[in-house]
Length: 110
Image 1 (cartoon, rainbow, N blue to C red):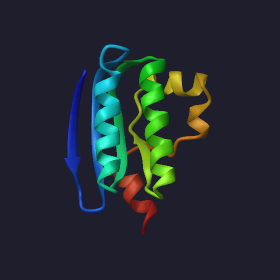
Image 2 (spheres, rainbow, N blue to C red):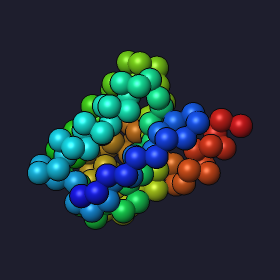
Image 3 (cartoon, rainbow, N blue to C red):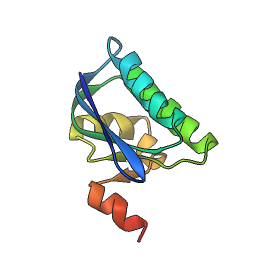
Image 4 (cartoon, helix red, strand yellow):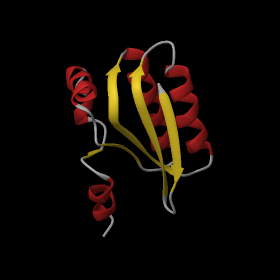
């Protein structure tokens, strides 16, 4: 798995790429929580995720809950079919704010 982080003016984007499984989900979790510690809203780009297991999903859930407690925005962007099928199975597609693209996310603030 690769993790790329990009700071924008109003939020940070974390792009996860590859397989998000037990061996690398602690890295994803740490990246997510470190952004939220800086009091920045967070978008997680899952467009290049080929596989995500329950530990990866747990990292997303923890990030979402942490953001909510801190009144920060949290969302998923460009979710791949593989990741979306897991989110739907857990019914988390009903919980997470999910955007098709960064443009869609930015329009919601207009």
